[in-house]
Image 1 (tube, rainbow, N blue to C red):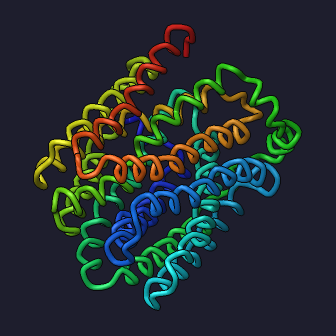
Image 2 (image 1 turned 180 degrees about the horizontal axis):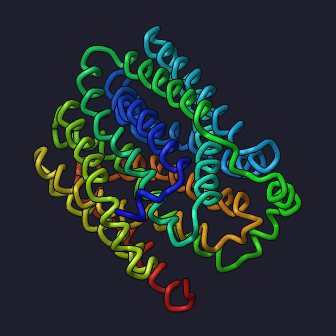
Length: 396
């Protein structure tokens, strides 16, 4: 507890603002696939492709973010992304309200993903700026607690409002994103020192990052983690409501449990990870993902889905802050933005591939739920095996 209280002010400001932003995000985003599938009657493979297209633009955003924060500063980039994304959510709300062509979702989601990933690179870098390496896992975990506290409240409210109007969901997301941007505008200071930023600009050579073989193998294998993570939003939401037969409000309750578990258990899990080998924690998280997804194929009601989500949540808690911590430790001090940008590229690519992979698997194997989720469970299983081999040859 003493370690948590000693975290810098910037970590707490980011945590609070991300709580607000995550609440708004969780109100609307779990229901995008459901809206497009049930209201607009688009096939899952097309929905997955639309989301993939959006996420691919985010891959570019991670690299751009690494460049921008070294050139114009962390704070300007951070605050700018909040304001721009609030306008994009407002546009999506208008598309839904006026029942405009569903393909208008694509440019809006692409730009949103692009600026969100710039934002993510900035947040990861700010936390690395203000914390010692020994405290980074804890700092990233604290930030996740804020995200998931917002995530805990959002889906239940979104599930209720989705029965009334999907447009309201995205309007709430726009307003909460704007509020979070104002908080950062007022309370975050610039954490990049002029001298270090000058050195970062000189070191902005992605070729040097790509030549770091140990690092590139590591981030390439994180693809399996983020492809796996994306299934809880894109594939599980549609499967649970359309195949298992639970309502949108029940799905919101399941996602709320996901957020609350992170709020209450992320810090204890992270304190445990600090005492153990971080690569082992990552492998354990991927194995839990595989078990959870395999079990969804046997789900017949809400309680099965909740049980799987509980296991998935502990998988996240073991895996996500650990990858961020390991990347920050593998990065030379004058190249943290570049390394974070490349890591984010693969992170975004995983989120981009995930909905398309899940959609293709669902369309190909439907209505056999066991076959669908057995196929999906192999993704994190391959990741666990890959990191096991990596741990045999690399010491972190």
